[in-house]
Length: 152
Image (cartoon, rainbow, N blue to C red; front, side, top):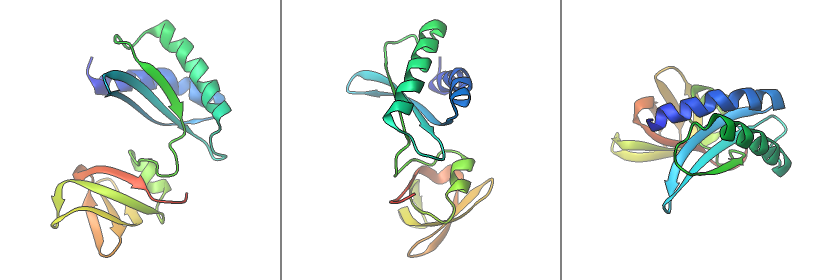
């Protein structure tokens, strides 16, 4: 199963659990680090995430994954908050944090730059706009990664 299909399947299974428990399923990733596979599930809510929240979701998700068995390889399950320098992956993430400071890395270069740090000014279907030392309208397909900088 392709990684994108695997993530999609895991999210289909996890979303009802996070919804029921009152959390947002912020992001899911399946990565290999130091020869080990990790399924990372990031949860969020308005009040912030505690260790108890992560444990509660981890127990429920672990039971469901054992039952459904969507991942053939062995892996470690990690549930955590997205953190203060959280990644921005979806349109809803970008829109939620308009007015906040972000750091955006580009695939290749854009206007001779590899990245920009500044205030996220806007987000539409195709572009985000960041105002730093210069203001840039960045095509979404050129975004390698985007993260919040500093405080929420």
